[in-house]
Amino acid sequence: MKITNISDINEFFKVVDKCKGRVELTSSEGDRINLKSKLTQFVAMAQLMNTTYVKELEIVASEPEDASRILDYMMSGKV
Image (tube, rainbow, N blue to C red; front, side, top):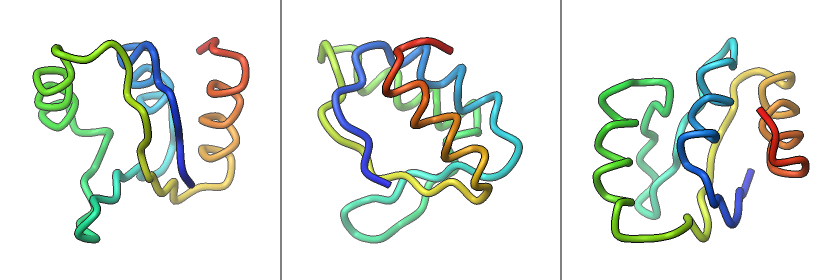
């Protein structure tokens, strides 16, 4: 699923942390990166310090309820 315009990456990661299954970022090269990994979250935060929001991410949630949780967050902005 394509996620756009993430304005609060910390809140987004809180939603990811609540997911039961795997949540992966798909890179433009096709690599999949585990977003539930604290190391990945730390590296992402360091990279994003120079931007105000994330324009677009391609993510894969292994569980349908996790995809719903992420979509609900994107629509409401609440964890």
